[in-house]
Image (cartoon, rainbow, N blue to C red; front, side, top):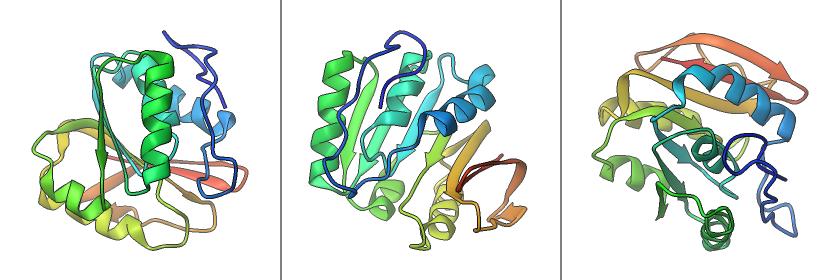
Length: 177
């Protein structure tokens, strides 16, 4: 796995030796960041369920001002920190803990919120609900939800509207604002 574009382009990122984390493929990552291209410069990004930090580091590489990386796995937190250090990425904040507690404790608004939870665990509903309840999405912000293509997310989700949906192999990206 590598950084595709921007300041850290070409840098290889540490990945898990096993399948405990499902990193976003380069194809899906490229598609996601093509969709987000006009929004990235100086943006504030929340990368929930960060895993390796792959998506947040790509955002920082392409001009995001800040990325808050969140995960509850100690191994993932270590990997995220290693990958941030390897890229010498600035603007990175790492938060360890349960996603619900993190979403309830954040005080910032984010221009881009990336949701890439473990598949088939039912986390999307509570993520969207907590993002709305805590006012975490900036006025013109977007939520990018990565999920299995068989899973259909609603057009209206806790007050957010789906504006785009794209399929890439077994993955679907749903964009909300």
